[in-house]
Image 1 (cartoon, rainbow over the protein chains, first blue to last red):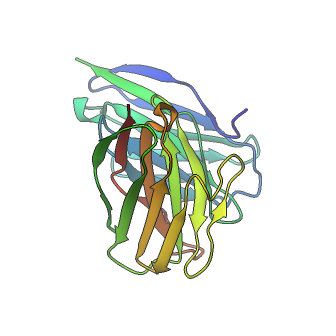
Image 2 (image 1 turned 90 degrees about the horizontal axis):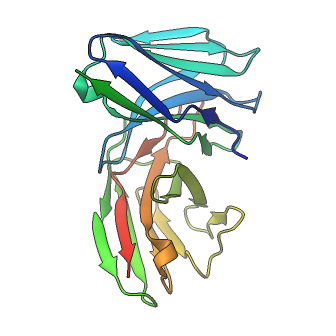
Amino acid sequence: GEDVEQSLFLSVREGDSSVINCTYTDSSSTYLYWYKQEPGAGLQLLTYIFSNMDMKQDQRLTVLLNKKDKHLSLRIADTQTGDSAIYFCAERLNDYKLSFGAGTTVTVRA
Amino acid sequence: SAVISQKPSRDICQRGTSLTIQCQVDSQVTMMFWYRQQPGQSLTLIATANQGSEATYESGFVIDKFPISRPNLTFSTLTVSNMSPEDSSIYLCSGGLGTQKETQYFGPGTRLLVL
């Protein structure tokens, strides 16, 4: 099975907040990442958090990290139609490789 | 940050042929990686492209099928050899500085369809 797990789908109303959850297994991961993939496009790095942090905020994005539970979340405030995409959680392993979750497809409805 | 480009952006190939994908980074990066994203799936690491030496392959991937070159710190190629329809995927390269504050940036991907 995968080392990084995410729920597969999220539907949210425009203007509401979206919360995407992720769990990982490697307690030695130093960095955790959120990438966005729009249809037909590559991966865009959204944000990342260092493992000694609990929270990181960047404009509409808030990342929360619970290292004890190995739980990571991404909150998108005031979700817009342009936020519709697949969001991948990834953990960086000791040798700089990334291990990805399956991706959460976020659909924003009017 | 690093800007990564890939060529070709997409291709349709016949089974049994080979395709070489190029990855160019606009700055020197320590680490370069090649990933595969099969339809509707997440990303799977194929190999780490090592500058001046043989690539390091992940379990399930072999050099004969996916030969990789990395002649310098800004360029790498991945060849998909003797293709079959099962090789239809998006192939992405990524690069990172390999330092404590390294962030890994991805190219736009090469969409490959094998008939």
